[in-house]
Image (cartoon, rainbow, N blue to C red; front, side, top):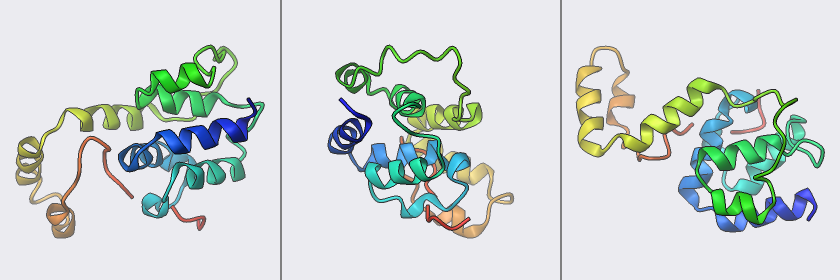
Length: 143
């Protein structure tokens, strides 16, 4: 199956929270405001424009699906065997860590964190109703 068909299948399989998670994980690659990413296809087009996702380079897609734990989709798309030996990891480790942490933070813990950071965060950030587990959300094509 060619990459475009795989990307279409991923688009159909993922929900809104998954899309937000993917956009969050790719924020450093896209270097833009990720709030405007509306669908996985939208994200994939932006990644193709940055030349980090292609038929010859499916590594990022495989890595993204692994991080958000869509293992069944990895197997269906035959991406679970993608060889990573010569692959430069594009997803930053700290993004992966933040995503993993966000999955484990409930609303009560989030309120406690906001309380502790009252003096360090902007008032608008404290008022945001952050939805976990997708992590912080913030992509236009502008850089």
